[in-house]
Length: 219
Image (tube, rainbow, N blue to C red; front, side):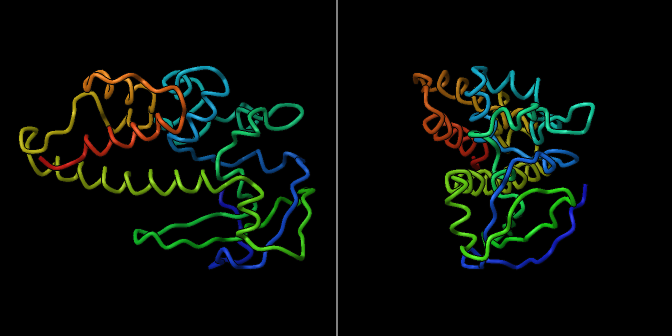
């Protein structure tokens, strides 16, 4: 599933333009990574809790979308993506890939498209324009937040391994396997704090972030 790279080290100001014609070739033989915000978006579209979504439609504890027997994305239908308006960031960016290092520095790579790709490259525009066209800004903001939390989570778990449970108080309700489950985490957090569970995804994400930070904060 390694995709060849045409060029890398690109910035938002770099020249780039692309129009997708929904040929669907890019929806096959690729691991589509998702974060809690993206899971919540699609789960809300389907009218199911994130708990059910993770069980039915993801692998590796919610990290990636499932494949069909034909090695295509589980949400690929005969007419294209069945959740297109709520598709994950990696799908919005294609044929770009976004990279962020531990310092928060961002750069992009332009991937080699499939041989049969019917997308059309443009000679005008920048990566920043493309991100706006694909409604990717909110997704990038969420990705940044959860990536930073993941690094903090990994550090907290490392500390936990070096200390006993009493000196590293990580909530029993939360585990490395279920932290991706926004609905369950928010419901548990609201129950503990006597709060009403919010209805909107943005409000749920805000409390999810609070719950995760509360979980990993030092004693």
